[in-house]
Image 1: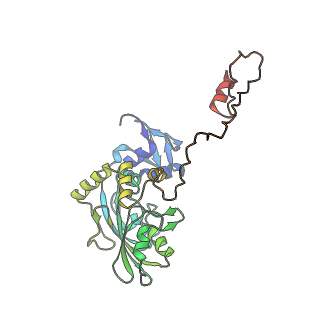
Image 2: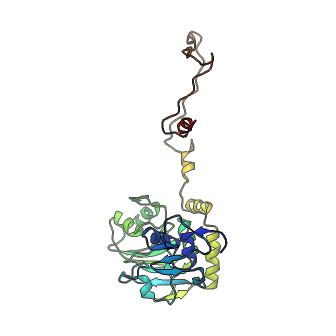
Image 3: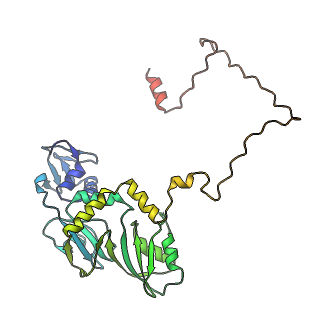
Length: 320
């Protein structure tokens, strides 16, 4: 395997689980490294022995990557914990170990990816607010005029105002919404803020992959073309891609907001100091106060600044 890698990456690379789930297993004390309880930050080197829940995990266990598209029904929980009733893994019953990419509420249905490729899970989760997710939503009463505009502009939630999004009303009580972020139960909380309740919520698209006619409760493999497009999209999932996505949704960067002249309510610049008027005497020049003489210090040399307690310089001075 070559040089040492982080323990969570090693576990993820074997296809056992995602890197994030590996971190959770390590923190829960369910991972041993060479017979000792593993800790966050541990690294794996060739020859090390890794156990997860009493089972040896080896690099040879890694299999051909699997990428599934699943139409999750309402009532199924997005978790790999198979002791949880109605968990997504037991429902699908795939012959190889797989895990979901991201989450979809138990009360929601629709498209979700599953895979045994820990690297792609990490890349997609790290990409953050750059990938579109489209939903069809039905609420409990007719939509009032201006509903779409209010939703699209962003709704204040406990985490802050949601990013601007695309909203299209499709019926008296239905609309489509495309987000580039995924806060917990975000759409349900957004409509509740406006006085509605989401009665049905279905995710119909993630990035370029659409649900189309895949029946509820069924899954299919990601096509070669879809895989290629997915990998190409993940190559650009860096900071610049995030900024580009935010700009396309009408979000101004924080740096731009702080630049002088961009804010309407910015305070005016202070007027430059003017020269004294002819009939106004210039302020008297105050002579500099001489420093008190300290025994042992050469004349004219300023006193050394005493470093604050606890600072590195203070610590370094005590060591001399």
